[in-house]
Image 1 (tube, rainbow, N blue to C red):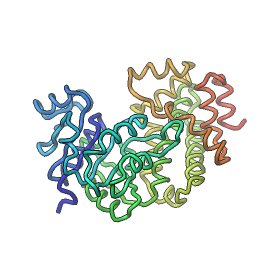
Image 2 (tube, one colour; image 1 turned 30 degrees about the vertical axis):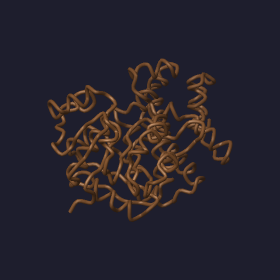
Image 3 (cartoon, one colour; image 1 turned 135 degrees about the vertical axis):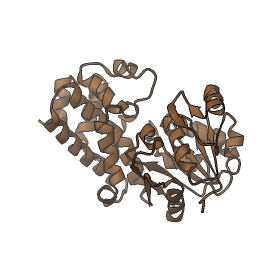
Length: 330
């Protein structure tokens, strides 16, 4: 029996499109808002998002549209899939179309620069009529999930009953989703793992070997835990939830990880701007949110040597050798 009659996905990139495919297996009607008209036209013509998720069939019960009112009408759950810097403005623009009592789930990863708001806080302020707000995260490469390769995720909402309903909506035989109330742990883990992936890529770029990279990844995970705990995250979430550690490992190790690839360019000696240019316009979330480490050190007195070293490197304050020495506390 379907958990919801209709869900909406705001954002038609690779991950938004992949999630629409997953949701279509459990939800009778899935609507996707796309910014790009060519995406809507391509799906209508060939049932494929050839721009962002080529070679994956979009099911017939998934409809792409440029009209937010049409997409959000009657949606009982809305999944937001976009870079964090666009979440607030988009949510505020679309709030008038969202029914009261709907569940809001962020599927992007990051923290808003300057305000340091987590995604759920952004959604709660922009859409006060929502039943609950939270995020979904895990070691999820969009193309692999869409093709049905096994993956796991955790969905965190400030209402456990809503988290259970959302988890049921996402769950398939090959995409297992666990519910939790630990919104802080999930969102901070999702944001900071991108910075740790920069560090892992930095090790690759400097050709430091597997031993050094493993130490940096392990210490980086400890830094994520300390930062999340300072904001009230549950300690056992980082032990029990395989999706949290799995997300860190996937982002650090996958050759397709933009954060790892960007860190690799930094390790080879490129500055931050030139490293970002290698992504051809795509966003490196780790560099976008790297200054969050200063917030943790200044406001919460949490020491994050790996993250702050990379932050200083990205700002041109350290050489590669100085960055490595700071990361390893040498």
